[in-house]
Length: 145
Length: 145
Length: 145
Length: 145
Image 1 (cartoon, helix red, strand yellow):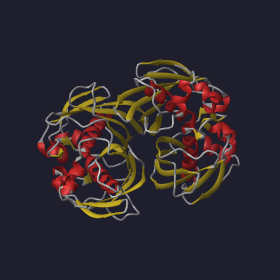
Image 2 (cartoon, chains in turn brown, cyan, red, orange):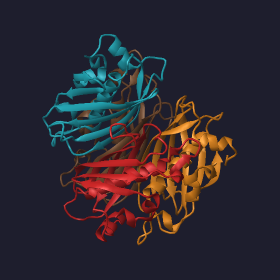
Image 3 (spheres, rainbow over the protein chains, first blue to last red):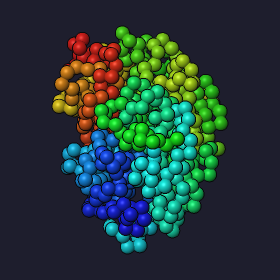
Image 4 (cartoon, each protein chain N blue to C red):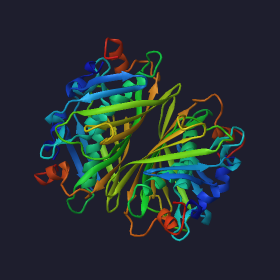
């Protein structure tokens, strides 16, 4: 599925695991993701991409039937700089699902799940648009799930 | 300055204007930024990158001397899908500056400033790290203006 | 309308103005709202109450017909302590309305609108519940508008 | 400690537990906390007060020495209406502490900890103000700790 989304594919993002209401995604470290070559700090937008995708997958993993979803809002806390040279992991949990809205918690880490460098709360609209979303489309056309 | 940050340069981001406490950045439309080729929807992470950068520049434009900054947290609201094929504009205003924290509002649009497709509130730490940030480093080494 | 909501009435909140997509609410200063008697700092929860209400009213002022609304999420930035002894003003603008979601910006101030002590972004569900919300109920039964 | 803060005392808030980096607070149900008498829905501002306090206590429980703290920003997600007639519990965890900033997660529930009705991410400034905060002051003068 992620392979069908150009920006994700270009970033090299991989789905590691999709389970009940949860998803885990990996972004292999690449020099071009770095904000500052001298410090090796990974870029804020890349972290958002990682967590937004893990979140969307966790929402899909919570639905009993395929529906379009769209990110409504995200809050990201940047706890510390990520270590340069390490793969980035994003893990999301859809902890509440209502008719129209899914609520997600997500964290990003590189050393281990108990030492995140970013934390996220987000909401996604579910089935809100008649047109199918990029994710749903990709999923339906043969993707990762 | 943005030209010194690989991910931004690769995205093709341009600084249009830096004024008192404000900054405006443009991201020329490119097919590879799109989430779903069939719909031309621009990618969430790209929008975050745009607004995070406009925000950081607005903070720099508010400081009386060059200091390191780091994004502490962002909240992004995705109001609607951006029109495919149009350049994306990000505009940020640093509306409050304290000793350690800068508060920023930002919006992203493609049709015009009064019709944003994304809205953002963020906080940045100012002078919090001894090591200089990517942005400050790039700015010092021959800046954005 | 606010007079119909016990917690607001008890706090002494007053609606000053409801216009197109906007609302302004006042909370007269009272000693009991203060977090720390020695410093006169106004309480965070009181500020949230103020902005949540201004926001809800701005959403109502944006609807062409009366619908139930419910706060979905709020982000509050506390820019500085409010001056003790002054009335608190909350102003909200519903800057985007979609079928199911309303997006609101709000600020709180005591000295003047250009010097806010708190800033807020929020989303409200519109018409999401079959049961009518507290605000809609109060509004219908003869409230502030 | 909470007894020293008039608004909290007036709301009837009680500290149940303060442990390593964690705090649990209870707000006994009272009719006057309700937004809509006909539905018994608890008020948004009350929930914020509950979670802001649980969060501040969790930060104090994480510090090795007493310092002033101040809420910098909060994001609150309202997952569902709370059941009328039940005591409200707020539980917070300070999951990351840096020199100047503490990061907190918190949830509010009435049925049980696994079924929250509100979720929160917040940041607190630590030791940022020379003047001591309401909480630190109350704590020092003999409070709940």
